Length: 179
Image 1 (cartoon, rainbow, N blue to C red):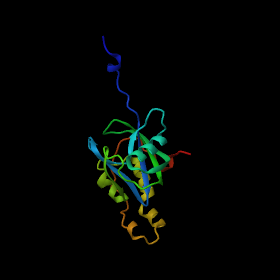
Image 2 (cartoon, rainbow, N blue to C red):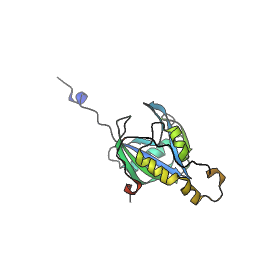
Image 3 (cartoon, one colour):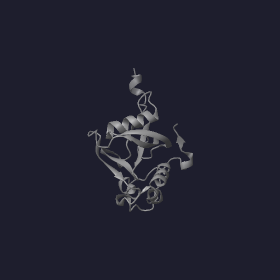
């Protein structure tokens, strides 16, 4: 007799990705254990049963880096080409706290990166809707609008090198606001 539970495929939940931009930089984290070629990435984690994407992004970010965030828009969804997982990308703003590694079992370090540095960390390329969002939020023109002589915010290049990634592209105008 076959054990039905053992023979049934395992259903894995969606992964939410928090794309957090503050002070003309985006937050990246380095996992202790790589998933294939993935090491540096945006804060992310699995949606728990009954949890919304927004609540999962807030919880995961708090658990991993001790930062309170407020999701503002869904940037896009796809099945990740390297992991096969269903991914939901959310734009988030910092609500409170200062990021630090709070889950040392899962994360090794974190970094705030300028737009021109992202490709040095995420070698496999960034999902196109996320890249478009980062370019809109972190572009030198946008940074120059809000900088009042602050020298630490200068020197960003015009954009990251174009990198391909699979998934459905949605232009920034197609972002779905959450509220």
